[in-house]
Image 1 (cartoon, rainbow, N blue to C red):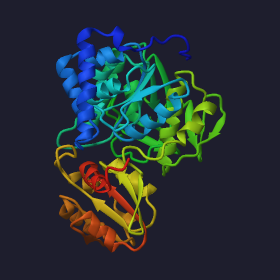
Image 2 (cartoon, rainbow, N blue to C red):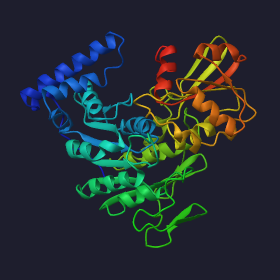
Image 3 (cartoon, rainbow, N blue to C red):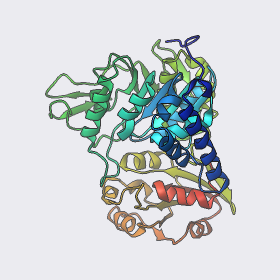
Image 4 (cartoon, rainbow, N blue to C red):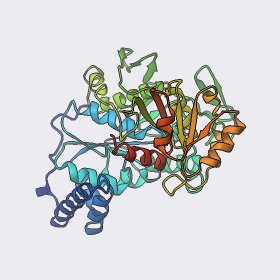
Length: 420
């Protein structure tokens, strides 16, 4: 679907006066926040702008061709890949620092100014609202799994919310994960849906059919409900070895700076979304290699003879992928349980830590003792360190892998001068 010649330029001159003022104040507040070292301003700017004009996000989105990316895991990276791919067509506004609620979307669009395109990462709880306010051309649905157990909705409830949101916007194009039964059930009735397949390593949240409650069977990459017609659809885009096969059957080698098989899947999703805007894979693939780190994720920093790599893992599914990405090297695990993480750490018992056996393992963070008990259960030897620097000094020269949940990750990133 080409969009050439169909876009209306977004300019402050076409917005209501109230929206112009709100947008200007939003940019100023975000700039002051950055200058004061209080963060990147991606939340405070949008918060203030929306206080002045509650319709600011809608006004800023008007006239842009927008893609939304949502799911439990992989949103930030897939958004960066998609923005890079869509850049073939022109400037792209995006919330590249991961502020994925309406305040972050508002701040990102205000900061970008006039752009014909936008790619926005959206927290899965807010997807319906953001669809309503931005009228996206395309929505990408990555996956659904358990996350923040003490406050997040149950997975099937989230799938129902998505299903309802898509039904309310029948003209919207959907790019959805054929390997996740919850995503398929959410999107299967959409009028315009393209399926991608990147594999699904975490399956513990989709053994029961959301349609009828019967068991879901799996075999050789396929899945089907044993009690109703719900089953895995044929994927038009799929990962094959270290490349992506497009709907025409052409295979494209994907060379990335980011580690792990999961990121080839994220790249496949980005290519599928960009294709909905008319971008050919041969044009988009080279741009994916420009993404080296994402808001500190996968960043590598050299300190005192150690090469430190940062990996974010915030729930069982993402810990599984982090272990796949990490080299067999000294590893620091850090766990907090602050408000952005969720206060319930019982999810640690859904993570299999056995891949860490035989490595030099350090643990730290506010809830290091919870992690210590979990590692004892998995017979993983570890050493408790009180600070990040203590772990660095205890590591021999070479690679140190750091795997941390959200606020623990941000703490370590701050110690490394907020590396991006």
